Image (cartoon, rainbow, N blue to C red; front, side, top):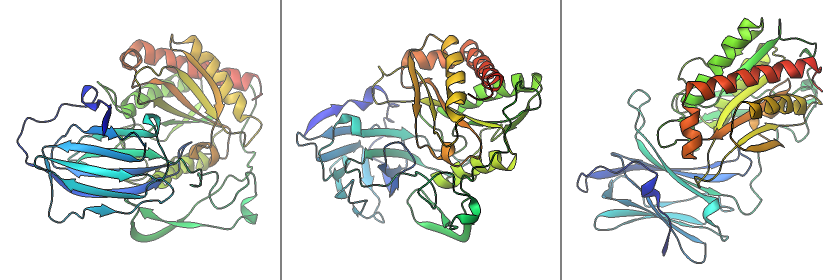
Length: 386
């Protein structure tokens, strides 16, 4: 084994306590709501730990060492996962540490791995967690391209209704209620006329509540997205627009500790129920390397106007910052596909980059981004969406 990533320099320092930290549970789930599907392993621990990540030369054995930890007697030591991504997962107890061992069927690199920690939250009743994400290298894990059908724009009356059960992050079903997932129905209720006045605009601050989003050295994504979104809300209201916010405080939109589909669909439902003219989702990017920088706007060409929305806002975003321009790109993000109106997802810099994180936590940069989003929306409507 050779050290690959020195996480101790970016993750919170572990407690100086003796080997009294216990691993209380391990959960494994396949996540296919991102551009690259991945398998997530979540390890609950009783206290903060600083993981150490190792990858062997073959690229097929991953070891995450948790110093000063022991495995609770009720925790099993072997776990199954999606075989396309992970062959097996097992825990090994050493004298003063625990190894989380992962065998993958195909060679992976540092870019296919992410390890990070999440703090305990008494209000949400969550423990300290160590999270291990490994990207799918097989290409066999199906992305969320659309729920219940394979083509965009099929009228709801022609679609087969699909139900799902609420799930925990372990993938195990909880509760008996099922919910019908609505699909994009080629609705043309949105307006393309000039001016912001009278328009209904849905602003979606990414993450929130038990979902912190990406974590930097001094801040969390959910707080930055909310701060910028509330500034956008105020400016749009002053311009005479009707603003629909998916959240206005630090909360989960669907429920605490919910799954990705439940949470993302709840945001889409808010926009669809309000018959919004556009949907703008605000996020902050992150990467394993602190060198990654810049601003990106994503869209899905489900209508002929989604590109225009992303393009006009992105053009104004780049006038509002010194961050590099990463361009406008297509994506199959869930919220872009399940909203009935033109939509864009903005990544306004990298929280993993120290300089950009520092700037993103200033009133000046937040104000500048908020003003640029409003100017971009005005440009979009002034050009009738094209």
